[in-house]
Structure formats: C-alpha cells, structure tokens
Image (tube, one colour):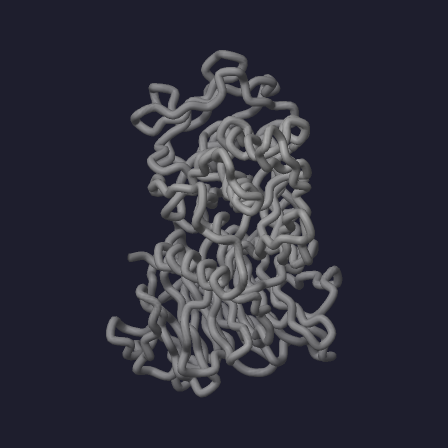
Length: 566
C-alpha cells in the first residue's frame, strides 16, 4: 500500500473519530451507500427523497445528507424544501464544511457547530474556523414538514465531505521555467468530469497560486457546446471556442500541456484531442491522429525528475547516505567536512555546508565541487529546488537572509521584506514557485504558503490554520518539507508532544503520521507523486524512517543532518 493510500485511509479514520467525539448528525436515515470509482474516497453518499410522514428532525437530517448529491441541480435536496424555497435556493454559490449537530430549538430545528472551511464555486478550499448556527425555518405543506430557510449555498459535515467529495488538481504554467503547478480542487465525486475540470481551467488560478503562475488558456476562451468527452482509450476531446488566432508554437505547447495535465486527474486519461471553433487544433508534439499524449508531456511535471529515493545526511562530519539496512555509506569525494548536505531532485547535483560563516561546496554529484563563501552564520535550512541550492541563515549583522546558490557558485539574495515575520523554516516546491513557510509572528509560529516571485523575492504570504482531529490546533511547529505536489510534512504539536503531520497546502487535510518515540527537530521528504518517503531527526541524532503501514523504523546510524533529494 502506498503512502498516499495510507493517508486516504487515515483521513476517513480521523474524520470519523472527530465526528464520533461530539454530538453530531446521525448517520442513519434516508441514505444508502454505494461504491465509487478509484478516484473517490471509498463510499459515496446516495440520498433518498423525503418519505411521507417524516418527522421534522428526519427532514433536516435528510436534507443535510442530500446536499452531498448535486445530480440534477440538487434535485433530491430540493424536495426537502418548501415550494417557495425550492426555486430560490442557490446551492452553487459555495459550500461550507462543518463539524456540528442538529437540535430542537422551540418549534424549529437548528444546526449548531463550527466551520472547518469553505469551498468556492470552482472547488477551492479555504480554512475557516467560525461558530455556525442555522435555523431551517420548518413549515408544514400538505401535512408534511418542509424547510423554508435553506442556507446560502451548501452545508456539508466533515463526515459527508470526506466520503462524497474527491480531490483533483488543476494545473497552470509556472512563471519561471517550464513546468506545471497544481491547484488542489475538491469536487463532488459524481462531478469529476472532463467538462468540470476544463471549466476550472477557464476560471484561472485562485489567490494562493496566482502570483507564481500564469494561465496558458487565453482570456476569452470558453468551452464549446460539444463540451469535453473521453473515449474508451482514455483520449479526451475538448471543444474550445474563442481561442485567438495566431498563437505561436510555445503558446500552443503550453496550452496543451496545461489542459492535459489537469485532465490527468481523471484515472486512465492518456491523451488530448483539441478542437477550436469546431475544427481540429494543432498542438506541437501531437501524434498523427492529432492526439497529444500524456507520455510526451513529462518534462512539464517537475516531480517526474525524481531519481534516487536514498536518504542522505551527515554522520561524524561526513556526507553520505543510508544503505538498505540503514548503515551509513560515505559519499565519494575529497572527504571534506560537512554539517549539512542537500541533493537535487534528479540527483545531478550535491552540496555540503559547513562552518560559520557558512561555506558551501556545490557541484555535479561525484564531480569536483565549487567552494562558495556565503558569509551566513547560524545556517539552519538547506535544500535544492529548480537546480539551485537554497540556504537560510543570518548575515554578519544578525539579519535573517535567504540565499540561492547556482551549481556554478553564483549567489543571489532573496528579498524577504514582504513577510510579516521571520522564517522559522521554509521549503520550496519542485517547481520553484511556492514556498511552504513556518513564520514567527510575535511569540507564535504560523504555517502558511508564499510565492517566490521571479526567483528573487518571497511575497504574498497567506497563513493556513491547521487543525487535527477533535479540533486540536497544531502549535509549536519547528520544521517542514514538501512530500509531493500539494502536501507538506510538518513537525508540530497537537497537545501531547511533537509529531509529524502531513498537511494539504490548502489546509483541507491534516494527517498525523502516528506517535514517535523521540522529539523531532527536522523532517525531510522525497517530493514525488506517491509521497511515500518521510524521515525525521531528533536533537540527539536519532533518525526515524516512516514505513508504509503507519509505523516508524529507527535507523542504525545517528546523523547530524538528513535530506532526501529535492
């Protein structure tokens, strides 16, 4: 079982425990469960319409469950509403995900609880922790209870959200370099269709991503009446209208890559056939059947460049890696001392850091390194992204500095003045576009994301509050690293000592990887689609490796620093 599958199982377990820990909406009632495709979370809520003689509480319960099913413009859910409310309710305005319960208040029924987040019309999740109260305005029509005051949009319990919605990714082009960057979306499983994904593409990136990407689909483009369909071989035909004439090869190449990678969120998608205004549209690299194959677009996926899954690190002042039995193997070279080490995602470049002020030795793996005097003191974070080494420390005057170093030894200082606090730790994603950030603000450490602007400044910081099961807020965060395209491993506390949590970059999921026997101070992960390699280090050098079934294995070798490639 892969790490991602383990995480999916844990999501359902965590949500179930969270719901079971408080008074909550019953799971019995007018609902049946049916299996869903491999893209789903395991089960899908299949509501039934109201039955004759149902009590007021059962009507409200049935309505809350029916809001999970958008079929026929929420046809089943509308049957729980009064005749007037049925035509006025606008479920597409947005969705609130909540933890709560329904209780009788006077002659009515109210939903009470706390919001966990909001979904916009595109499917983007935003964390929200607010008190929630809603009176459904029960009324009698022809002797049957009906709801006269539906919410503005849709209300979904965390339990139902975990089971009836699935995550997909809408990709956009990185502003720097050739690569696609994903925006996580959460859609009803029944609506994960090529047309829905293309519509998300046309809507463009949201606020969390917009600074670092651009939309390769020209403004004014729309989905044609023929829509988007997929054939038995996995080829999607997308009919667009309004694409400007005269797009160059580079623009058409990016248009095809962005659309195809986004559509690949649907299992078994293998290629894209594009039409514009009813005519086949030529894209570079398409085959003789005018199909752009996904296999031809791997260069746009930064994580496809991942090479070795070995854990590297520093032991007794030497850089090296762990063998299969977790023994230490020193790297070949001149045996220069090292305090920290980093390896590029593709394994092509290696760097070591030592001393204060810090000296970097960087170059081709197994080749002759370039020595660079950075001037940084108290260097505390180092990793590769987009072919450059990123090093956090302090300048000669004590000010915090973030530097990037090329394999040729060229140094560039990154502007951090737009951040509202000091970096505790940071990690750039494989595209070099987004930074997962721990920021010290006052006496607290906050998790969030920021954009790397043109490779020279970190800006557009947005805090992402993190809540584990049973409403436990994560605190005391000390370190992080990307585990994949949209997930980050974070060392933090949920009330009883530090642990490692895998969190979604939009805050929609927080998964505890299980108890650890040490107090970790560093975490590293291999950022690849499976996200199945995570390791942590304690202050005394103890190294724990995450295993696929939710356990941690202690390595034989203690290390002063650890680093997966990337």
